Image 1: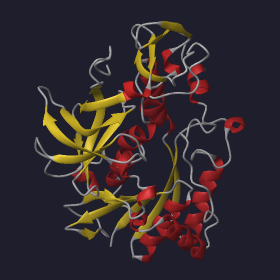
Image 2: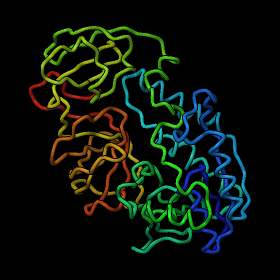
Image 3: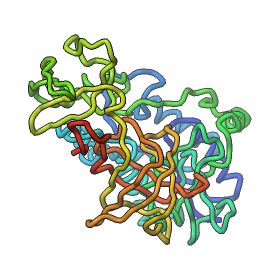
Length: 377
């Protein structure tokens, strides 16, 4: 048993994570992170995770457990490392994943570093993912820890934790990964937590109303450019490429007047061009990631068979790894993936689709032969 810092968001998962660690005999301290600064009038109940109510819910859970509790202000780090790059990515025609970035730079990695400096043996979170050591569930920090999908695959969050290195995983605990969501809520109710029935939040925490375009419009200037079809025909004009992302179908405007559905298939920021086309134009047969992060001590070798997942709740697609001339890897897909976008996280799993190997940001992706676009820039 050891001293464990538990990141308590104010939700049911992190509250139960803390409770499980107390039951197991660990010396638990709870901490709530103040991250996104969302004006009161823009807050939406049940959306986001950075409101005053969330902090109060976390504090009450800590009080029920009788453990020390603190609130750490990391809003400046969050703005610098997550919010500013989020807007800059859209301006560059890139589709960011702020939850992955947050874990990579703030909520997981930076918090773990701070916990270690303060003398804690491990950091625990309420993420739905499992840790294994020698094939067995992990109950204490230690070497040889590997990241696996959660017991409740529908709630699995290993995708957003792929950035964890083996050294970081060795100092991590994920108690609720062994439970289904229903079991988590049952335990919360039995413990007397008022968050037992609190809804899950699926929105970007700093855009609780879900209006990404509106958020970006307040931060990025209008930059008009053409909307063109894959055959080169100009269909209309937009007022900023940051309003569009690969695979988008809604909000293309009346300029797309085709009987066949059109999707955004490319966003070229330098020329301010948004290209639309049929769904088939979204299909990719391979993608590349640069400088991947490996969550395992022995990274896979060229030719290894893997599953690749490009969205948090998308199914993995079977693929083979190939080395490239640079530091990255090519992932050759058995079946085409639709809607692969530059900047997305491509996360790799081993053959049984349980153990997370690591992953990286998409830097290139092959389009079907015969179409004008050959790569996602």
